[in-house]
Image (cartoon, rainbow, N blue to C red; front, side):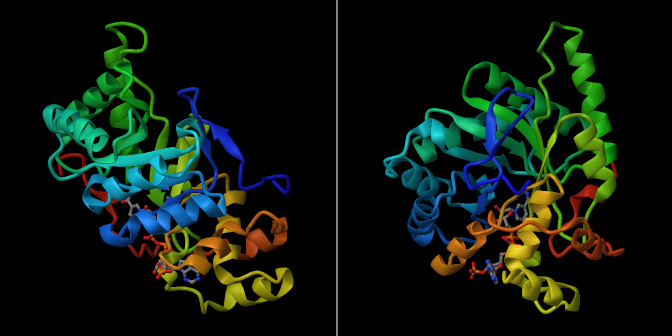
Length: 289
Ligand SMILES: NC(=O)c1ccc[n+]([C@@H]2O[C@H](COP(=O)([O-])OP(=O)(O)OC[C@H]3O[C@@H](n4cnc5c(N)ncnc54)[C@H](OP(=O)(O)O)[C@@H]3O)[C@@H](O)[C@H]2O)c1
């Protein structure tokens, strides 16, 4: 872990590599997004996390295309809107994301959340598998899926596999709200057992827990900020954190996490028996919803 650098990547079960540190752009206004993503790329981030509903895929694409970096060196994620899942809408969203960003492929396309019921989720998944076979999307996955949603998808993939090897696709990523006050150990274990990479969204608890007592001794001991300690916790849990900031100094601060390592004892102090999400929580919705 101590050997990790800002360039570290992990191989997904699709065969493609994903940079361990991501940069999130939820609530980043479209008119400043190109500038902040450009700053993130200059700082050394190589992984940008957007979504159709963030309404900033176009400036993300512009920053990537104008960065002077090789396209293959940058990892771009988008997500299919959750409330209108269907085969046709998912297929159309892939085309729309390609058009908006001006990219020739999307590194990772996720189903944003498991709303809409079984048939809608399955249809959306099938469209992602087809988009992957067409080379429009390199890896596919889900977001905000609880274990019951994942088990449903696993069963569906096995069903599709009967039609031929590779017809079902593989879930490469599950993206979830994860931080010490919402560790989601059950879902993380389920995914990690199957080689599914877990991405941690709201890894800074949206800035709402910076004054927590448990963080103070750690910031003092390591000479690092609360944000840096939280991101390090995420990495050391085997997660891919996606911090968001529109502030240049914070963009840099959040990437400066590769020169220290939390000891196992310090990691233990961050084992907090609490389930306090700060975002929406679709992981708990029923399969019919
Ligand atoms: N799949 C999903 O359903 C889902 C849901 C939520 C988020 N996400 C993804 O995950 C990303 C991150 O999550 P998030 O935006 O909810 O929250 P977050 O990254 O936990 O926190 C962002 C907030 O923390 C502040 N901040 C950033 N760096 C800081 C630092 N070093 N010190 C103090 N405050 C700092 C930011 O302020 P400034 O920007 O003003 O600097 C912003 O208000 C999103 O952008 C998105 O890509 C996905």
